Length: 514
Image (cartoon, rainbow, N blue to C red; front, side, top):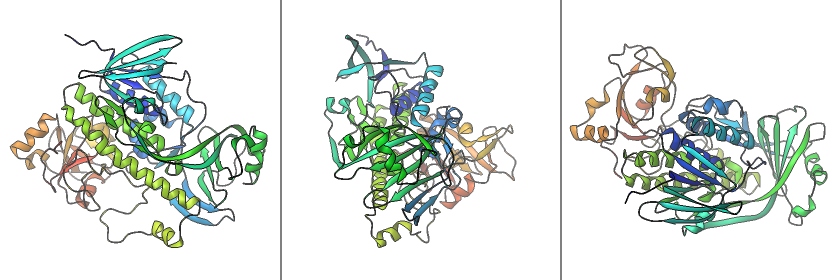
């Protein structure tokens, strides 16, 4: 009997993670139905930043220029004591992944509105969103997933081939599929104070962590003329002590902020979590974003990790649904995303210990130490380009290896003289790039058959001092790609659609195993 589906994928929860899932699926022509409990975007800013990796995902989805208009470049990070002694600073060097800034400040409600508008305007025929729908059940069988929801007393049944639970830290999807959230919650309550800026003050554009054992503070400029402070309550304080803005003002005045500087827009309370689901998948249902992992805010990676989950899962699901990849590819989702989520969680915990003055002098020195004799130029963990630790890659990762690294994205030219960022020339394909040579020339017949089966493209990358020799070649105009490959001794790299290097001739060019 022929199965009837309402969409290829059901998405439970339509925050940033769910929207990126919808955009990624639709980019490949895959339909989705999203079920969102709330009728409007959550009005308070939660996430405060995105970085160049996330912007590269936006570029892949064709929305980076749209988002760029509602966010601001971030100057730098610094950790300060109240006597204005600087403990640590992380400068942001120019990005290697596309756009110049490494980090941007955002105002989440505004950015989220742009993401939703992009889906509505570009993919109205592929993505249906039901606002006000409370999901009440999820059942799956060998052929698909059935999601039951209610809205205004009416029950809706949505049938899809797969489902994504992106319904936040309190995810009901997680419990309905039998997953368990493991970890801890800090017992300290924080008040988040969002303000409208009335006048500029010196160094407002630093993201400043005011380090103190009793009252550490996060101080960050948000985009669109907003500013935020995150302040912990003392053990003898509760949210009931701060019912209105009048009670909040003494906290800001203690930081040197007055009514001349800002107008308090709103405030809310929250606690920090360090938690992760025991699995990101049960059968045809996947968890993404806060439904799969929760982390403290110190690395600015919570929302971004969720959007990266959605992009990773989205392009794989799309190709599986189109018959371009085997279903076993979906097993690589958790293998690739769990280590990344764990990395940023650990980084956030470590940075939080700095702001709370819980690290020793020796630990502080170790955090600021620059390792010697490395192949890869050193960058602090917070700003360095991403690397896959596992999943669909072939060969060992590490300082001296190109495997698992995200290829840089300079301006390149093609044979016809068109100049653009690298990804625009690569398209949405698996691509093998050769250092001034045809990469196919280094493949055995068996290796080439494997890459051909994935629809791979083959491109020689020529120095800008050379002529191109064929129709599908690229020119390294910024002199970035070829030196990057040579740093790791690679003549050929196999680049995935998400721009991570899956294989190189340094480790053999056979297609990585699943």
